[in-house]
Image: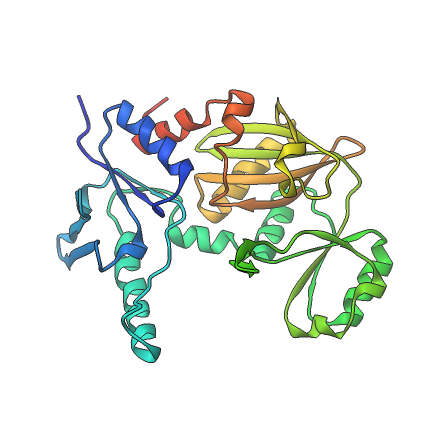
Amino acid sequence: MIDPRPVSVVTSLHDPTADVVISELHDRGVPVVRLDSGDFPASLSVEAEISSQGLQGRLVTPSRTADLANIRSLYYRRPTGFAFPHLSGQDARFAVTQARYGLGGVLASLPGCLYVNHPHRIADAEFKPSGLAAAVAVGFLVPPTLITSNPDAARAFVKQHGSVVYKPLHNPVYLVDGVSSVVKVAEVAAEDIDDSVTGTAHLFQKRVPKTGDVRVTVIGSKLFCVRIDSDLLDWRTDYSRLTYTPVEAPPDIERPLHHYMDHFGLVFGAFDFCVGEDGRWWFLECNPSGQWYWLEPETGLPMCAALADLLERKKS
């Protein structure tokens, strides 16, 4: 029997990863309602009523209508932010806040819906200190890490551990000459640290001598592990220099992966590990909305099908 309930995909207009998942769902005959919360209220509207019958109502896009009580699953990817360019100052701030807590609150409260992932759980898991603390708690190896705004503490940490890298705690949109860029992971020496550290929080981490990196994509109960080899400190800075090899997770990694997911209430996660010279895997981070599809053509791993199975709520 065909399940008529739609899958909702919440993301921006230009999202190639979402495109391939939607194409897979269409090929399976699964109805999809795609929307970008940033289109509200110009071309996206919401009508939600909360009563003794629970949450009821609908979302309306230019081409689709979704019954709020009938959404099978919601794939929360990378929607754009709310914007009210016709308003200014405090009026725009007020409208953005109402949209976030109104439409955002409705999208976070769908009855019987499987979230991949729930937006609140994504927000929790994106805090890097929380992720590192959870990684320690579930049993991963985690490099010694310092988060500070104190330059003396930072210099002492570098002197204690020798080889240390700086990492941004989060990467917002950062424009350089009008081009979107990111603050890169970089090795830092004690003499590089000056009083500008007092300006905000910074993350310093002991550099683990490595033989390679591993990206582990967790989709429901399935693990897809890919070793990434390069001569780069941060492999994300030049994809043309990478080679990929599917691998199996060591026995001491698989269980902590699921415990980590359970800790944050996630069903999808993109984990990054580095492989030490002794072969042990060191946890670096988990992105609850991480990219994954570029690895499928490189390795043949059926990640798109696995994600479509999850969203379809197909029992394996």
